[in-house]
Length: 327
Image 1 (cartoon, rainbow, N blue to C red):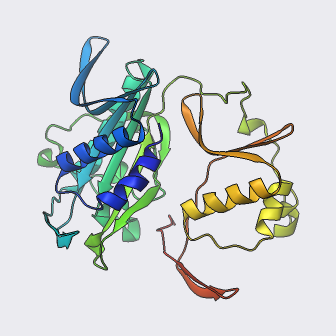
Image 2: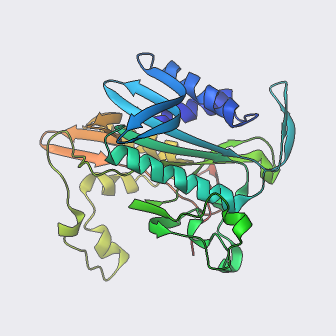
């Protein structure tokens, strides 16, 4: 099950939600539309070892169980979208919000590792830029370890700072312990208008369990065993690129988005004789691009991050957004 495809479809129908419950029901409905053979349960509980766990969404699909935890945090926004009035409140308390997001991630990890579910997915949607923007000056805050801004990496045991007040920590005193390592990659969900609160972005994380996930051909790549490339120049480093990628860069294209980059890579691979599948299921994973030609197999996960760029390149207007790089 590929939740990114579901979200891409959902944003065209529901670019904004009244509440977390509204988001939950809309997402569940959209999952059912894309995967009609699935069984979906909302606000249900499942049982593990000596415990019961409550879930926002539980999906049964092709013999697997997917646990989905949702968060929807908002800033003040008022507007009419497709004839429907929306009045979103400023929920504030971002420090608590960050803790709760990572707490859900910890719970999902535990569910996957104990075998209660096969895959755990955390989805956080917000129009509050303080969640995904890197704070200026990086001043110390009570929730420093719980920050989830773009590019931030989190793992291990996380706790409040020493000067965190009892009121802030009430009911959330326990540290959070994450077995996996997670890098925060925020994606744009919708842009309603030019107001900062009119942009919604989402963070989607897959809980990392103990099970080993291999490609369907049984081969696994150990990056630690791959030789490092010592390059004296950009050109010498470029010489180590595979032939299909060199020929792709020679087309001198500027993708408009991550989806556009995926489409361009797919088209190029097909042009040079590869058989290509997008969003192919490989074990329990989804691969953005799976390409095969003769004895050569390529597996590609696509990411595309941009700085602000407004120009004309080869007669075409290029307008790329700044996507908040970590310093």
